[in-house]
Image 1: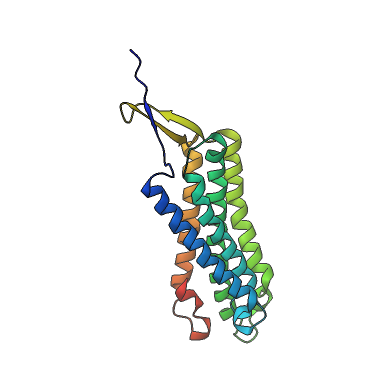
Image 2: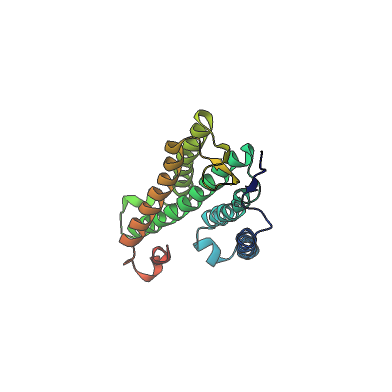
Length: 211
């Protein structure tokens, strides 16, 4: 006799899924408000001193990271399983790269204050934008390689819970998954170490303390 099995996934009918969705929407709206404030006062000295371009890139990347949560909720299919990689790994790496660029710019700006310093030539948006572009490009290459060689796909798990079919995403390549996560961890670690080393800079260069 055949017995019909129930399917299980992160359905929007569940309280846990709704909680994740609610928190993501609230955080996205808060970020949107902050972004709007930055846009409104983009020509003020405070916003300019905070490296306006990097701040915009950082806020946009954070917004995309919050929105990526919705690809992890609901009924998974092949396309959403693959999009998870791009919408989570790349925006998060851009956000961390922006923090890393901010930290580097703080250190360079302090070095450039010394008379006759050769660090002056590194001041400007070119250095910060180059850091973000370079660091993000590596993550993009990792993600695209993962998708090309062994992309994630929908998987029906009938072994974990007897009588239930768990619909989930199979990562396809464990190496690809851990490469994406590991690279994000590396960026975060480098950013933290640089910020920690720069924590004792004078008050006019104290942005690294908050990073």
